[in-house]
Image (cartoon, rainbow, N blue to C red; front, side):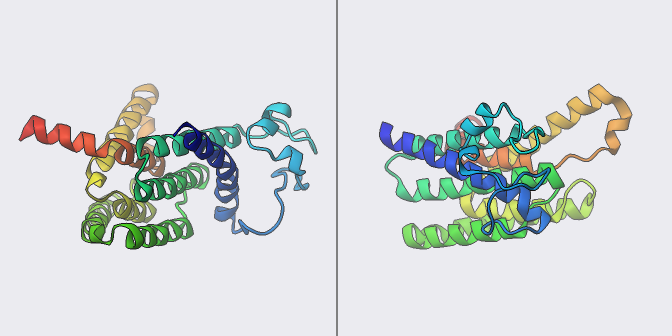
Length: 251
């Protein structure tokens, strides 16, 4: 098990580097598969030895070799974050191949949309479509009987957020609606605690900003994708326990 978790963490580091490329290029209309990595400031090509996850950033002290400009800390943070998520998914679902496969795809999608939503207020359709297609294939192979529950969860989550978007379009975008639906496809009934956690987290952060900045903060908009991503991770790893806790406490 230890070796499997270590390999998962290594894979997370490597794929985390790719996710940062997706997060930067996709909203800007650039190819995510063609062309070598380049400096975002001077556009110079980045050598392979300067593109090793985490270690290159540390060795370069967060500065580009070509022009000396600052390299955002989001690169190592994303790589380490995805490595931790991969290792956690494998540890929690050890021995359950279907859940591991779904979990790894799911957290990769959530990391990608977190980057794009924070950076450009965009949740790309391409990321959602690829993740949804992967979920359908994995479930069709490993657990086709769960399709009805997952479909209901997707429709319910997407429908709930669609109503919210209609009622308050400045606070909820269609990207959030589509993300909630795809999350339902991955999580099934665990979408319920995931959405509750996301809404609570978003509300708490909003209240904190209002308390700090006053009435002016009401005019600010927060990207909700990262909160959905946080709720999604909680729903994935702790959803069953949270539902059980609710049922045993209130029923």
